[in-house]
Each structure stands twice: as structure tokens, then as C-alpha cells.
Image (cartoon, rainbow, N blue to C red; front, top):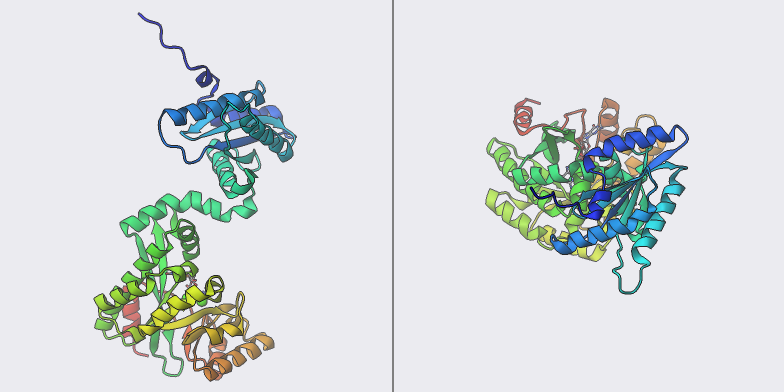
Length: 418
Ligand code: C2E
Ligand code: CA
Ligand code: CA
């Protein structure tokens, strides 16, 4: 019988990935309470499968070997990244030193050798995690987030989006592909008559494993992944389809749809809206698109052009969350808006704060002077409603009247006598 083929010398130096958790446990134990361990993640991006990729990865691994002390390990994490597990460190600075040495080993080479420029991320154990999965995730996030600096140390404070990406990217892509989002509808009430004058469409996602994911999380991740236009198209298409059902059931009010900042850069948005309204037979003047001030601050002219296209089709525009963020009165003049939505942060203090009462009353007066309709958002208390009504607020939205509802529950809500 022939002997088994000897392992490639580099492969012999690699610790099998399956042992990562155990190795982390051992290094932490050996180090005791005063020492830390680090996972240094090195990724060669944009590599295509094949010999060349394998060769580069082997090259990377072999040049890193001089860094390792007897109790350290090197793992191949996937087809384009390796991880170093270093124990007995005196803190993050120690790990950074090692990462800088790794960087030097990889590109300070003689002219006939290949220079390698991996992205490098560092996660510390136990601070950022105690097992392989947590540490790899954190180090990977650091490598991507600090891409320009080539070496990044995981920073939980800077990392909200990174964590959401790791958690939500694949489920979100699947949900979009499989149509697993749905919409909620929050009634907007004309306070004088109590009639439902409008409904706002709000995105919802109930994942089997992850539970319910807030629209803020969905939108942040979708935006980062470049999926915001696709997601908004789904909201518009589904929202208008449901709106046509509501109208068939006798509903005569309006429908409001939120747009995200990046939607305003989409040259196809107005065309898409026009088509969808034609498909569902919706009169344009019954549909309002809500935007925020921050959405138009960057690339103002381009956003304005697209908003004007939407206006020209006959749809309405609302300025959402008014009073938060940059809130410049200049936008009231420069944007072709029809409605102003006063943010909940003003509404919730109305009863207690004389300043907020002064602001809200003046804003409503000013808006009316500019021929804008005013909606008060997040109204929960009768006292808030009474004050807004006294100031002439045209529309009220908030838990006081109703939470966002499923379509069927909205139909029940609409059927109730008022
Ligand atoms: P928003 O556009 O300001 O929507 C109003 C938010 O306030 C909704 O939160 C609603 O559930 C909540 N709300 C309504 N009344 C009350 C109240 O009386 N008290 C309190 N505490 N909250 C109230 P939701 O559905 O979680 O949405 C959060 C934000 O996510 C929205 O704020 C909007 O900016 C964004 N969003 C939601 N759906 C979409 C969407 O389809 N597209 C885009 N681009 N953004 C969306
Ligand atoms: Ca809104
Ligand atoms: Ca709002």
C-alpha cells in the first residue's frame, strides 16, 4: 500500500477551524485574569476561485508564521481569509503591534515577491466575545469598517450597523426575494369630525427565527446593501394594491408612503410610482410621499428634481419628523411640499412645556400661512389632542386613536361608527 500523500507544509501549520473554540478557551485559561487574547482577521478581498487564490492564501499564511509563538494558532477561516489567535497579550495595543508586524511581513518584501495587502481586523477576548463565531464576526466587522486604515480594532460603539449587517443581511435578502415583508396602516384622523382622513403605510417584518425587526433596522441594512430602491418599490406596489382594496371597501381618504433619503436619488422613482398608480387605478392626488429634511440635504438639486417629477404627476409631498434634525425653515420655502408632520418629540411634551406649546402653535400658524396641511404625530394623550385641535392642527396620528393596524383590522376600524 502506498503511503498517504504528505500534507502540504503550510497546511500542517494550520490548526483545524473546528478547534477554534477550544483554543480560545485554552488561551484565556492560560492567560489568567490579567491577560487577553486576540483574534486577528486577515482578508484578501476580490479573489476569484482557483489556484491563484489558493497560492495567495498560502503565501499569506506562510509569511505570518514568524509572528506565532508556540501557543498561538493560525486558522484558515474561508477561501479568502485567515485568523491568528494570539494569547497572553497585555491589551489591545499589544494586538495592534502584532497586526502591524503582520502588515509589514506581508508587504515589505523583496521586489520579486508579491506584496499582499489584506484588510485586517482585531477582536479581543474576552472583551468582544469568548467563542470563535463572536470573535470572527467582530474582527471581520472591524476589518471592513476601518477599511481605509487597513487595520481596525473592533469597537462595539461604532458597530451598530456592522452587527445588524452580520445578523440581517442574508435573512433580509431572502425576505425580499420571498416577499416576506408586510405592511401596517396607521389611521390619521381629522379631529373635528373624527373621520379617518388618511392612513400611513409602515413597513413590518416578522422573521421566523429573528422575531420582529424594526423598520429602522430594516432600512439601515437595506440602504447599506443598496437594496433600498427595491424595498421601496415593494412598499409602493403593495401599499397601492392594499389602498385599492380599501377604496373598494368604501374608504375615501388618502394614503401616505415613506421614502428613504436614497430613494430621492433614484431617477426611476417617479416613473415607477406613475406605473403603479395606473395599475391599481389610484388617483394621484390621494397619494402622499413623506420625506425628511435630512433626505434632501445632500444632493439637494437632484432630489428636488425627482420630487418635482412626483409632484407633476399630481401626488402630494409631506415633510416628516418636522422639528428634528436640521429643521431649517428654508426648506419650507424651497421644497414643493403640501403637508408638514410635527414630530412626536414636540407633541409628547405639549401639556408640560410652555415652550413646546409656543413652538407648535407658531409652526401650525406658519404652515397654514404657507398653505400647508399639518399633521400632529405620536399623539397618545387626550390633553395633547385637545391642544393640537385648539391650535388648528388638521390631522392627528397616534396611539390615542390607533396603533398601526393590519389591513383586516384597519377595515374593521374604518367600519366603526364615529
Ligand atoms: P415615521 O414615518 O415617523 O412613522 C411613525 C412612527 O411612529 C411609526 O413607527 C409608528 O408606529 C410610530 N407611532 C405612531 N403613533 C405613535 C404614538 O402615539 N406613540 C409612539 N411612541 N409611536 C407612535 P414605526 O412603524 O416603528 O416606524 C419607524 C420609522 O421607520 C418611521 O417613522 C419611518 O421613518 C420608518 N419607516 C417605516 N416604514 C417605512 C417604509 O415603508 N419606508 C421608509 N423609507 N421608512 C419607513
Ligand atoms: Ca412617516
Ligand atoms: Ca414621522
